[in-house]
Length: 359
Ligand code: NAD
Ligand code: IPM
Ligand code: MN
Image 1 (cartoon, rainbow, N blue to C red):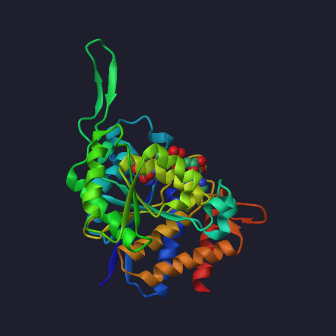
Image 2: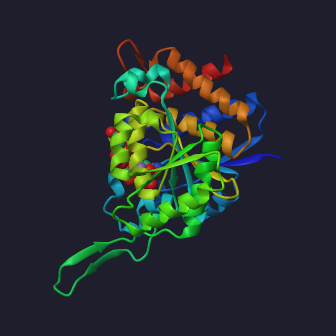
């Protein structure tokens, strides 16, 4: 039976990096005889310009009917003035909530060849392999009430609600513990339980779920300390589990440990095993259209898609090995360039990964 992948290029560098990732997908598809079919749809600013909605119904329907979704990135200055309800980012958030993609896996792995590209000393990051498990469909991103209101004195105030139910915490906890079982069996839960009640409950439920996983060690850390520890001694972590907003922020910080945000892939999964795969970075408006964006986070997201939603471990491994081979050859996009490396464009990086796959 064929597997269906929906491709959503999005905005800014999205189409440039997705083009390379789709070439890689096509290559493994024929090389490993995977029977994958893919088609494209609109999301984000590109969808708003065409249809007036950042998440057209047809995109959502196609997404629901797919086994997996590959996304570039959405957003950009062109749409920044729009009402919140139609901003490109709303399209992405709508995909996550409509498909219940609550479990966001963001692995920060340092390819040894990139130790020089990290902003931290090589000995601090050498061998780094951590997994951030970010809750993706709840927390302050989705809590009600929210908005901007006018007070009696005529002043306006903005407000959002940070809320998590026990069941939402329980399912993301299980994702983190399950992932830890496949790794070094340590989960560090990140909260702000010294100030926020919602994370007092978070911590309590983490402890409760930990009892189902006696083989996994659970620890807790406050988020401000966690941000500091990530740049002080990141290798102390195995799996970090946290809420939507803390996970957003900590994963960008973790990205830099790996050399560039252009290296960090992600998987967003629901309980059915359906997933959306995207780089952790955004649409990078400052470099869009220049052909210099790093496509590796998106290419590595294809590998995650093959592994987590399509059950094609060999093809996933082949992509990851091809990326490593290309780095061995000294090829680098500008964001990961270092002394002695050869700087290549987005499409040349795609060419090199394809060549390594065929070798
Ligand atoms: P960003 O991640 O787009 O860019 C931050 C910096 O990293 C920029 O200097 C950019 O050039 C660089 N960068 C990012 N990806 C790169 C790559 N592949 N190769 C080389 N350099 C790369 O973050 P931002 O500038 O804060 O946001 C820009 C827009 O993207 C905003 O509209 C934001 O809402 C959106 N955004 C979307 C997503 C997503 O679609 N998942 C994620 C984050 C931000
Ligand atoms: C990400 C992005 C999104 C988020 C935005 C664009 C809605 O920053 O995927 O990390 O905050 O989740
Ligand atoms: Mn982010």
